[in-house]
Image 1 (cartoon, rainbow, N blue to C red):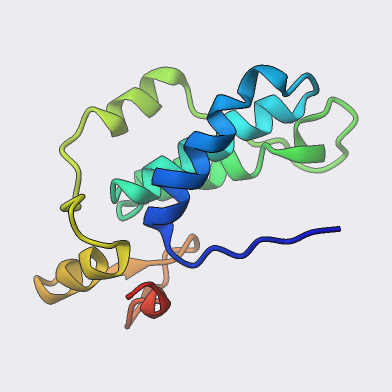
Image 2: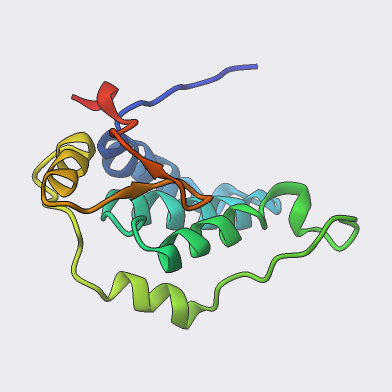
Length: 134
């Protein structure tokens, strides 16, 4: 088994994701669905659409509907996926980020102007968890 750890979201969104997107026609299994959903989450994070409760709830709903959790045999609580209209509403906003800066620099800039960074549970993160992305 092979693992690839990428700490820089910009690299993931701008280099790794396009490589896999080119190979998308060859994903013949249900993993294509998971790839498409993962791509939405990557791009939401890259453009800074992960700050509001609405944005976090969409990310969480998509995440909670991947792999075995999307099968009809799943025994746990089913979470509804966001509609295409809800996703489009997010991506039609102006980005919170300057795409010429790294994800870390953008997060630091938001914190300097008083925007709080929160986790999926709504808890404030006092300092950016993305320090490794310098």
